[in-house]
Image 1 (cartoon, rainbow, N blue to C red):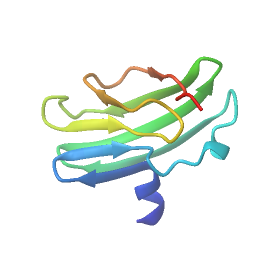
Image 2: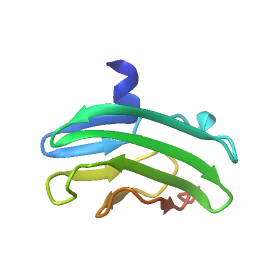
Image 3: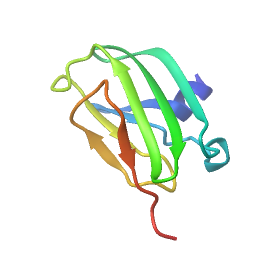
Length: 96
């Protein structure tokens, strides 16, 4: 359960992705993936890939995006609520 919470955790009516992912795990050009894991509304798999422009996040799921609020909150990258699933989203690094 502890490892799951690094990648996927639930808070109230929200699913939060990546809040416990360490920056050292995100080496340029490499990916880390977790899942499938159950969440409200179904199951999901999330992959994080370090790219030159920032961090590519790919959420694979059959969950309806209107059924659950999903936020990506990886340390050192912009936080973003996902409106669509099953396609990569690019997160920019945060300043500093």
